[in-house]
Length: 72
Image (cartoon, rainbow, N blue to C red; front, side, top):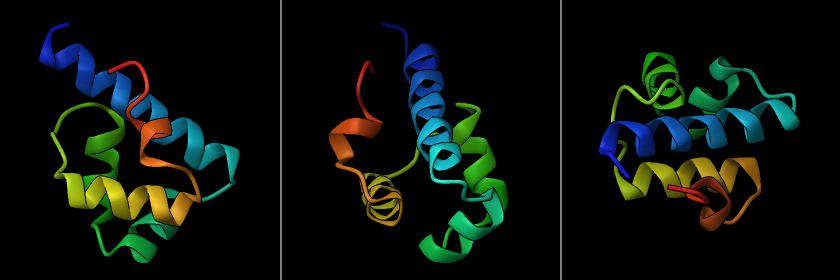
């Protein structure tokens, strides 16, 4: 799978889990110490986040990292 599509799928997974928990991008950014702009770029597949950032996001969302990387 092309990298662009993989990042897009990752972003869809992050956004889906965030919305499922009714957490805003701003709140997720605050809880993960990642800028809101970076959260937006992750969710739209425009940047490739580090594994450490993904672990932080998974922890805040209360999901396993495997949930966020499913299908990529």
